Image (tube, rainbow, N blue to C red):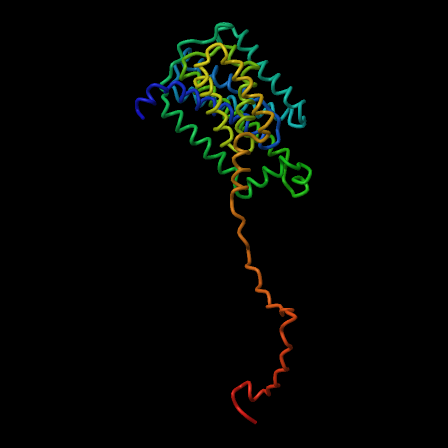
Length: 319
């Protein structure tokens, strides 16, 4: 096990950071908000942490905290502006936000390193730290999927009008979704940057939107577990397909397309369907015993009528 981990430590690290990024997209989708602002927050958190660490001599965890908070604030402010949009319009607005972050990073001069980005931001972070942060985020998301709060989120996603009629403040929930998405995206960017020691504007682009959305589509968007399944598949699939050399990209694309077509609810949705089908259906109450029906055999002779019994004879006494 130790040998396997030492050999695949980089892939394990990539799986955890990819999952963090995907969770920043999965959370709004679970709320019914078609937002990709978490990708732009990834850039904000990454650049903030790198700038603070390399240019202002700030400690690793302070830089991570500043990057996470700034990304959350910016995403919340974005949500205040565009929270009334929905569907593709909201998605286009959040993608535009991500592209604006990339443009600002490219034209940021010496502060952001321009098109070359920032190098040398190697913080004191290891895979154990990333795992603990990821467990903390997943714990919070898992709690939000159960109980009354989880039912409110499901209602907001499935029927916002019904949620409003039940007294749920849909607008407030969606605004808080932007805040949470920004915090998770900023944390993913800050941690990833200080792990890899570099960040460039090319990393904050439309291809990251495609990757995060692919993770959600393959794994499932209703639960964090779906994002985990998708992150594992997307991160490890190129390693598995490396044996086919130049056919790797083609096979990868075919598998992703097939998953999108035949697994509308992702791998997690398929697993839940199979579990429901195989689970035995228990009966709530046993059926009432049926009275024995008289046999209609033509060979049987009718029996004589039974003598009437008085109340005293039934009780074992005589009158």
